[in-house]
Length: 322
Image (cartoon, rainbow, N blue to C red; front, top):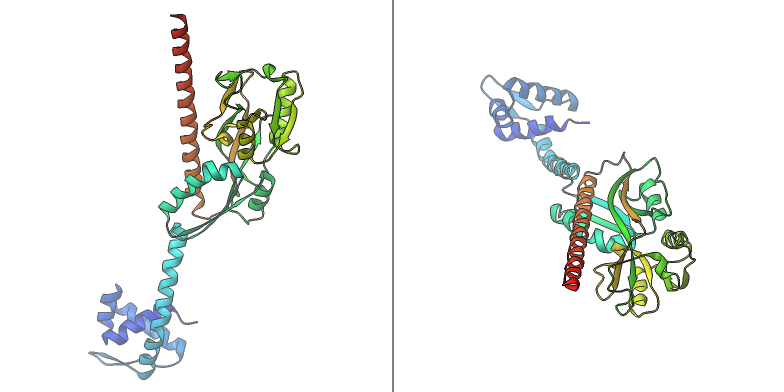
């Protein structure tokens, strides 16, 4: 195979009609240019330049080779530019998967930040439960995935994956705005034994966590409705058809709902990003940074809202006593 460096030297030498000028243009010595041309002549088995003491003249073979080489060298230059863009993460494809709530509350914002940084990349996003997401990352179909696990239904992620903590979501009680507890701000589970509950399906971690939490409070919850879509759950709750225990992220802004913290103890759903340590996609660190930044902003907002709630509660107590 012909050496593309030698072909580039040939095209410049044919144009310049001078090894010395070719050396100046390419940053070589004249001797290096002469050696490259000699090696190319041996490779093709033909003389490429008529040499004299003061000049060089390209042969017909050299003229034709230089003409044919231009498109090939241009293609190689384009290939080099594209490869450099890929290795820098300026172009390429990022394949991700997550669960529905995270896609709406975390992924949308994080991926917007990624695309703003790297407008030339293709970002692909799929949705599934944690088992489906983990399987996609393990088999290489996804660069990274966002998954969750409940404290009350713990699980371990495969040792082949790196798990990056993103967000610890508290579980909160959700009621209709007209519910007797809606304005309380916090509640103990023992007060809820006679309530109707709305929950995710019985085979989900959310349902398991809710039922176990209620059992520790001394009762078995009376579940009357189920949906794996927390938007549906919150809609049913809003209409007064029951109460629900939900991860804070799934409640969104909580507009029109009573959202109460549990005073029985902190219980969380832990959200993590998983990826293969051998994955060398240069876009992977960028999306992990974006996910962590988005989740840090969410956690800060929750903390500020909690502080505001405490201030309001203190203010109300002072007013009541005065």
